[in-house]
Amino acid sequence: MRIEIKGLEDERFHRPLQNIANLFFEESEILPTIGEKPDLQVDFHWEASETVFARAMLLVNESGKKFESSQELCVSPEMSEKELFKQVKRAVSYVFVNVLQDMTEINQKWGILTGVRPTKLLHRKVQQGIPASIAHKQLADDYMISEEKVELMQKVVDRQLAVVPDLYSLKNEVSIYIGIPFCPTKCAYCTFPAYAINGRQGSVNSFLGGLHYEIREIGKWLKENGINITTIYYGGGTPTSITAEEMDMLYEEMYASFPNVENVREITVEAGRPDTITPEKLEVLLKWNIDRISVNPQSYIQDTLKAIGRHHTVEETIDKFHLSRSMGMNNINMDLIIGLPGEELPEFRTTLEETEKLMPESLTVHTLSFKRASEMTRNKQKYKVASREEVEKMMSAAEEWTAAHGYTPYYLYRQKNILGNLENVGYSIPGQESIYNIMIMEEQQTIIGLGCGASSKFLHPVTGKIMQYANPKDPKSYNDNFEHYTHKKIEILGELFTKENFQH
Image: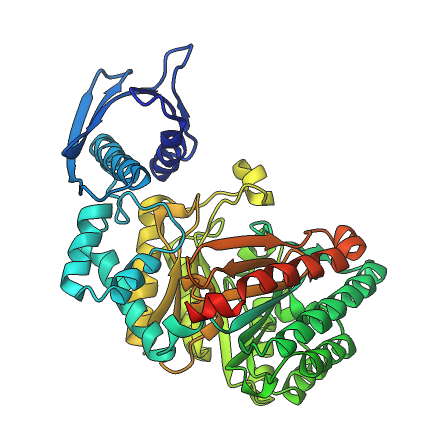
């Protein structure tokens, strides 16, 4: 869909408008001027004085149909130039969504919101002491978020504050993410740093040497500065792709290097690929008091697993779940994906029926996202996925099933190019939530990323500004430069965790 935009010369409008267009059209292109005839023309007009006013008129060139919308927002005299322009962008986004909704008859339940973490908006209002009813109205007015989605946000925020009552005061601690960049095979939808482990043992050994170094040095700095760890999360890739002996040495390093590991609230190891789980590896996890793992089916349809490159069987998922449970894993998460190739509501209902036989403590329901770097995005014609309407039915089925089985939503996030402009929701039996998932989504503290492709998020304790710093994604670059990246992180930590910042 080629969309010509007029009346918005400032380039700062183009990205938000492109993100909004992507909510409505699978392929869209926003251009200020188009040489050949565009599919749509949108004329904008805006002005900012005592109020902010915006109007959009959309013309469908093929049919000649026109759609119009206008919006007026308040302006306060104290607003800075930056805040004023934010209001202008909001008004422009509002009218753009409206004309596209009228034209396509697609209702955007998340309104103009294209950000990843909607619940942060509601947390901010809770911290400001704004009553829930007023906060809900503000979210609806400011972002056009539907009542249904605002209620979901409120449920999530309530649950998070029940699980982590001190969520807003954990800036003086950190969480740790440890990335293991290896998997048995690479899934078609995946863009994580994940490399097939077969034949790469030399690379694995070098990588683990660098990771041990990072753990030692970061642990030393945390100890010297009296900073405790809230949660530790092993992700990837698949952290159980490495051998039981390598896992054992890694957790021994963690206990030796990190401060007060016995007081860490939660340690999670993603054992996402059932084909990596063995009795020996489970014994190692238990030896180091780690009993929260993920065993991820994604789907219980064998043809789907084959199509997306997961070389394990449905039976293997079930068997490894029972093995993990019998060996003492008492907090198991499972991931399901809505909208995988070839699947519609009946297939997803089968997956829910199989999940019911296992009843994991938590369940994350993802909506398939066409990520730019994935095999699935590069070869879209090869992967037939469900329609927007069908995906919404599948999400509704997940909501009904989780509610009927005692699960409560406790975190959510969204992604660009997500089917049906929906969301990913983490559900849990109350009391079994992942604290790390709450910390990473709500960005209330610094999270230090160690390992290949791991990204650190440094939160400034006074301004709340977040700075990201990522390790290299490929093992060779990581192996060549891990010392540099480790010391750069320590340098950033030293600038953030000063007495002045924490006395502020």
